[in-house]
Length: 180
Image (cartoon, rainbow, N blue to C red; front, side, top):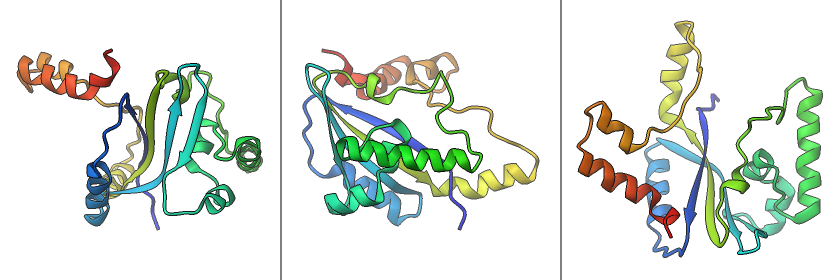
């Protein structure tokens, strides 16, 4: 089975007010075969910068520790303290033995450092099912990914895609929690 492009999304919450809307939308996307949630972690960074982690899934804590956290492995965070870190390191070493370079980019994204203190975050690893046929068509044509990234709504004004008022509203929606 082909796996689609995989993306790690980090969502911050200053004062979470959950009503099930986020999970319902992720479930709708899964039902439509648009995306699949591979793994998800809830992280809380307190005012001193200490981090608490909880695995978000229907697995028991023991199953999550046994199977490992894919997000935790990506960002170097163990789901079960030192034991979890050791398990992640072992998996990474096995990949390196197979000739796969793991975490060798000095410019790599430090996800945990980006989470502001006294903030909760949801780290969601999703697979984009919708992109599999497009990616495969690009590969068949000899193409390859050079880079990717989300574009700020404010940048869309410069190219005339949306009006400044709409861009400001969308920007504020996307970044509201970062403003104290």
